Amino acid sequence: MKKHILTLSLLSIFACNIAQKKDHKINKMISDKPNVIVIYLDDLGYGDISSYGATALQTPNIDALASGGIKFTNGYASSATCTPSRYALLTGMYPWRNKNAKILPGTAPLLISTEQKTLPKLFKNQGYQTAIVGKWHLGLGTGIVNWNEKVTPGPNEVGFDESYIMAATQDRVPTVYIKDGHVVGLDKNDPILVDYKNNFEGEPTAISNPELLTMKWHHGHNSSIVNGIPRIGYMKGGDAAKWTDTDMADHFLEKAQNYVKTHKEKPFFLYYAMQQPHVPRTPHPRFIGKSGMGPRGDVILEADWAIGEFMKTLKEEGVLENTLIVFSSDNGPVLNDGYYDDAVEKVGTHDPKGGLRGGKYSIYEAGTRVPFITYWKGKIKPQVSDALVCQMDLLASIASLLNIEEKSTDSQNLLNTFLGKSEKGREYLILEATGKTALRNGDWLYIPAYEGTNYRKAVGIEVGNFPFEQLYNLKEDKAQQNNLAETNAQKLAEMKQTFINLRGLEYQKGVKEVVFK
Image (cartoon, rainbow, N blue to C red; front, side, top):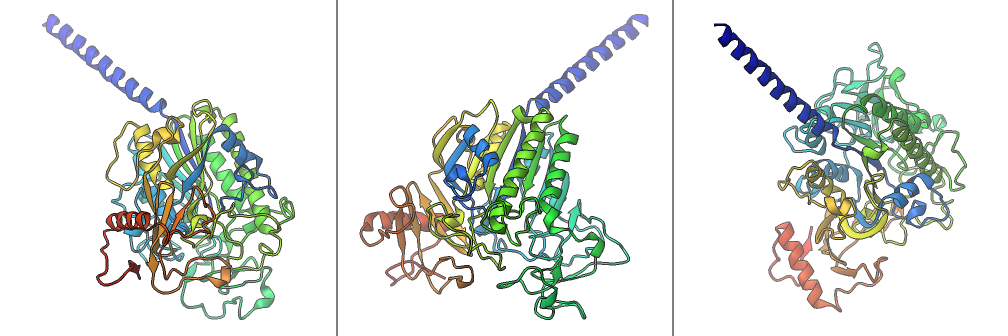
């Protein structure tokens, strides 16, 4: 009997040791995984930072990432507007596959399915902590939102353990911060009401009460007034919860810093989605006038400062050398995007496009080609890469970093490229702008002919009026001044067929060119 008890005890100890070793192995596996941070700016152009050629603006902290990591010269957002690009970044899917992936109002339902594969879910399944701080703009709820109760589904339902966001954009209502689905600082006796079609009785607007404005609207932004700034959409109530625009950069920075400080013991994924230089451009008083280019230049300097402070935190907390950082922008630049703020008048010699053609909203290069940097101190060798890469590729690439094979999305595994171990990028990429798509393949870009016009005179950008096909060799003509569609019929036919095969479209019988609506 004693011998039997002794045997059982030894077996129990042996099993316990195996379990402990297994737990230790799992914990070690998790601890060996790097933190990953995506720093995402809003409307920052290819030529807006000094490491990408700007001379009128100096951005030393972003430049430090570029000089210490990989500066991609052919790095792309998926789209020329914000919501589609953010959708592609987090899901690894082309946004044109989702008909609702377009610029959303603040009351739009959640764009990402809660069943969908996402970047934060990928991390979470591997034992990571996950969080978003900053701009969301991917919809919330189911389409009918009561802002005075928990707003769900949202970021927390698509993979983020923690979320501290603004619902849409700084120029759209509701102008409040939302933490894990709850409006921050809300007074239940002053409930929030939001409507994007009809104003609330007695509420002032930019049209009815222009004397209340501290910022003049140019187009589109003439509804509710918050902090003297006219917005898109109507809002009533929630006064105690409304943000202070000039403090937003500091506010989001503090939240990002605190997240690192309180989650540094385990691997984490942080999506730090900054609001600069999107309108309304409201720099903190510390930065007003610093650029000499008006508020747009000032908020770019403010963003660079915030990134510098954030990097200091990573270093001070001892996590910098175990953190992969990806820096980029959701789309290209725009000067006048709805307000009179001297962006056009004071731009001077500065070229936000960096020599490219077009800008935000445009299918031309400046709409989607953006600053794109990967940085990992001690792991990535500083270099410049001409490889064709897209933010959409982060999902499959990060999966590979975590020893997972991912082939169920449009994302491609470019991990070695992002880490500087390969110069090979994508073979092709379909780019999107305001519902239209084009094909980048090697050095070439093909833009189909489209019916109708799509020229945004208000913003002064050549968004696109395409009655004929266009073909450009971007290596020789990055400014897209020489349309080779008529002089290189063979390449045009090749690009057109590839585009049609990828999009699943067919030639229209009896039509010389493919004409899309």
